[in-house]
Length: 503
Ligand SMILES: [Zn+2]
Image 1 (cartoon, rainbow, N blue to C red):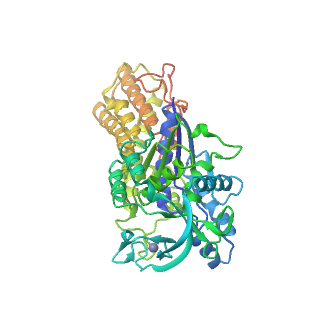
Image 2: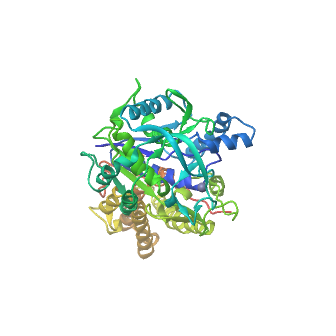
Image 3: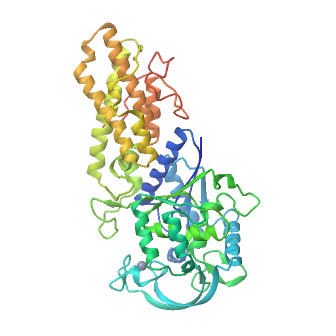
């Protein structure tokens, strides 16, 4: 058994949560559930990044204080993730002065003591939309890529984090190790993208803003005129949630042999690949093991945007399926490989619901259970193995261990298809006696394996399947994946419809 600490990026709650947030949480939750099922001890943290000018300005525009704004919006995230069945252990908020701030302030002091922070005047190109200084490399035809607007030249005094000195170290970290510490990226091609940034030369990173331009944040210790900028504040959530540098510190979820995996979007990969490990290294904290980097979600083939009018509201998707999170969870895992961008389409999710969930899976379970019910609900011997298992557990486990979640889910659905073929060939309703019981028992056993394989992806559906089959929901898969491993399983439960037709 190993220990796993999984984190997602923390969400910026200047507005209600969107589908990008959902994609990442569902991915992380599926990974967390898989780790638990295979027997690992897991700690899973999510949270919100609540400071910065954008929150400050949104609050002003709405006639609220920044604190009032985040206190209103953060529960929208917590509530949505609850309804999506995201099994997190810890929700960290960067506005939490008791839990988050002490770690951040100590980390700043450590970096300062290590000589990594220095205050100087800086003149640069600042995009007010992005709230950050841009380098020429960030711009396209002189304009911010995100805001299609020329940044303005701004001069101000900042504390800088001396990242430029670590180019060689970071290159070593990404290619082999930095003084024995390794840091890997999934998918691996992202490493090359980051390495090319290192090869172009790293610049120092602005770590503070004058208080006059950023008030809503954590003050720089010992300097009342400055507020910490996002890096030291937000990235530090991963260790503040463990109480680092306080009397509540729990390093057992960070230090080896625990495996630390940050799950993030491709847009913030470089900050996590470069700034974060350097911050940790210079404050005496070990570097995480892995970055799992997902792509972006488009809507009906186009970038989601208010002006196109194609923004998908997570609540509307949940409503469509009467609050059941599993059609959306299934869709995201089935349709979007972890390492690629994906698309949300209303037609497609309805099609997937009808064909994969309602027909292939739901009808299969119902047909088999109704037929067994007619025979008094009794199960017979299932033999030693079955062709229904297709590629079996080994291929499934390999896929999930390598974060090829769509592949793992596909393997479970292959067994479902195979069972449907088998039922059409055997026509068990026309059989009699032992032969009938044998065919139906084989199908029920295959359904047990399908339900177990679906547990990380669509936990509620799996649990309902297991209950209908007359089985308990297991905490881990230990002793469950052999064909016929449930020796005392003699009877199925009550059949009920798994997925209702859509109105
Ligand atoms: Zn911008």
